[in-house]
Image (cartoon, rainbow, N blue to C red; front, side, top):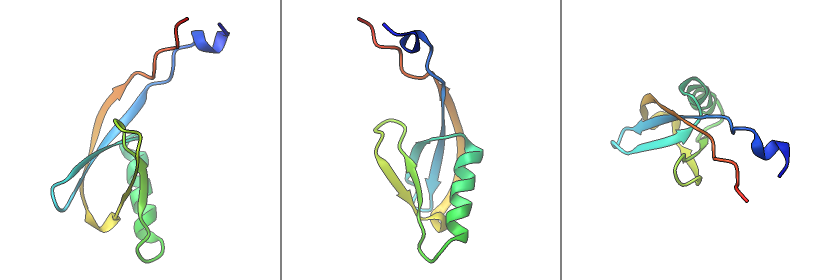
Length: 85
């Protein structure tokens, strides 16, 4: 077992994004980072989407920044446990 396997993994912050339809998405990243990605997409080219990783499924998620109505800071989750042998 290497020493890197013994190290605790960093915690992962999540943010909930609520869009105009009422759909809710929980994505990886703290609320300020998620806000920055949405603002950058909104200021970008026409129909530029904000890309995230869903926190539960790890799937890629593209959000139209014009449809975001609420950002809510989620809980910080501990990182994955080191693999045991």
